[in-house]
Image (cartoon, rainbow, N blue to C red; front, side, top):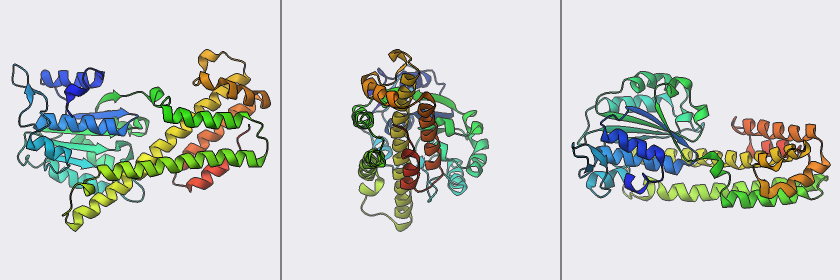
Length: 343
């Protein structure tokens, strides 16, 4: 894939291309948005354009897009290009550790092997721990010549301020659009309709919890299948043991990180609907609703609970989200939080 396929529909891609046309590309970027696949795709396209053997050029000879077919482009797509480095969260804590940054720094300061640029892509920049971030700051501020650093994050609010201040930030996609995706909306409709029925019993709340756990199980399975197919492990048969172990650790961490992102997104959708319930208890207009199509179910719940109870629901879900980010047992955190919701 090349920039040409996205430039007409994405302002940030168009901005990147203008920077290439003017020879004013930044040395450090933070790409942030709701879709990690889109972020990685754009980062890969930029890496290919910088190192393409037959790029599309301006009249001044500046490369503005890749050919997507030369050996360099194919190697970058296959994660085998020696001058394009990928860093992903590792270890049980799913963080980018200082040892990974030190290894990256040793490589980034070497001259490119056979390409014009060295490119380092950090997926999950919000998972840089403090020690790793501090070790990275000087290089992020003044990287070596002919190198570009690209940080990716679906949760830019969690990226350390010291990192943010040293990067040019480009946004891709819309959070609100993600919350209206057909699959998420279909699941939320089921939840809202079930909650809208008379559900004062403990059994009723357990049925709602079961609906959440069932959906999370589907998300985890789909995430494992998608990322495993995309992993370099599936593209290469003969891999030395050290590299194989590294890729396996990265795959495991990537699956867990992406699943956590999708879990947070699912619970955020639920939280927005519970906000609609709260607005109903206050008798406010539908123009403020996140999900007008689900207002009937929200109204049924709002008839049974008070405004303070509706606000407490929002606070309970917020606390549950924070608990889930602290590595507590998922099923326990969800059970404790969701069974306290008032419907």
